[in-house]
Length: 143
Image (cartoon, rainbow, N blue to C red; front, side, top):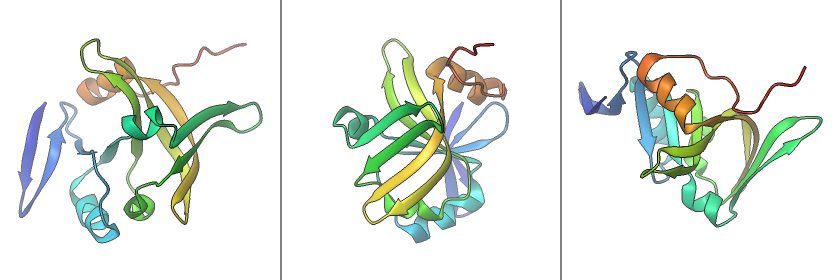
């Protein structure tokens, strides 16, 4: 994967081997910046490891509604995002293990975001980014 791909007067953080462009964000952005970058990106990866470690981002499974999350002091600028978003909740760079949450829906309420998602392993995310292999939940399917 190459990094910082020039696209006219803008750039994408990462051009994936499958041809998609990813924006990897470690800090909040203003709504206008998010909207402007959306013209040049196919997906967002938001580094939420610190929020998750400090319990500002809580993720849990609900038997009726699936995987839900609450993100206190959420990055409000992403309320305007239209592209798929993935929350990096935990990733150990040395082992490559971790968890990402694919946001399936969210609402921003004041300083908080509430939403639903699908959890994925870091290995599944790597396969998606390298080879465009569709994601499936890392949770075992019971029949």
